[in-house]
Image 1 (cartoon, rainbow, N blue to C red):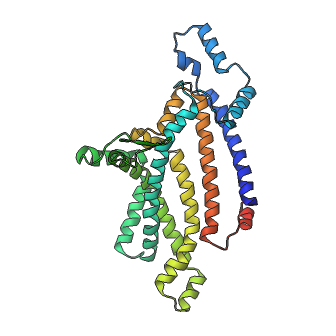
Image 2 (cartoon, rainbow, N blue to C red):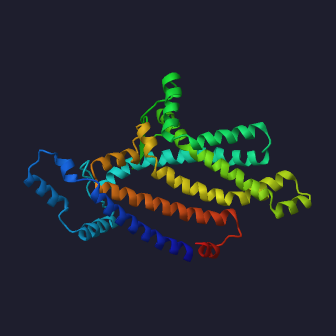
Image 3 (cartoon, one colour):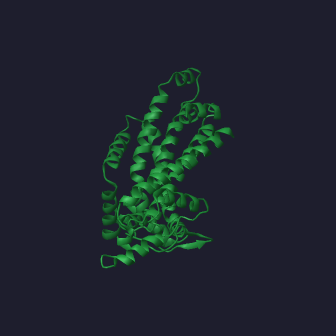
Length: 326
């Protein structure tokens, strides 16, 4: 319990730092009044708009107002869209989260088994081919993979849509495309594009860790005891392999969620990535600051979940050990 409370305290500190940095930096990316009113607006109109937005106040006052409102779930009004920032993020959040989840399911579901298999059959020709393919997956830019998939599966074969989220249904305040045929077809290409790099990374890490564990003394001792190879590989070696792999999966999930901007732009996916691109163009400080706070919160929650997963995977790890390690 003390470990969880300590991490919650760290999370609050991280959120405050993220809010401060983003609020400071985005003040210099452009003039929101100029973007909202245009070049032809009079000086009086500009001053009135600046006063209405609170931009004449000191930075400390603006930041304190932002934090105070954020504590109540109010991140202010978007300069670009003229709507509450919380509403905009709530509308786009399901699309990005579903895209990140599906891509990480693909990467983890294939990457871990393939990494373990290539470690156990490292001289097999298929293992060498998988390693070569993983190098390609790591080296190729994400946008290039996306364009190639669109060209092949959308333009040439016509099997899958090249843009959009398809038909969505609402369940309470959540909109999902995973319950409709067009929504499932629409998420295939962007999730595969986003997951290929993660798949290659997880596969190579799982392979390296499995090879390292198979060379340790306790595996030799298990063989000397006469245990069956399958029991040694999947009961003893795999458990020790998964600890660093889980860390990588958690961190990569945060990266996928936070930095899916390129994939969302290529596939016109209506998620947070497209929203951020539009916010940057219009110096939409409240929206950008709220987005970075949300990303910082996601990373903090994911790191906490990864630390707790250590305990589930390896019973030797306890909260005290985690606290000392951190």
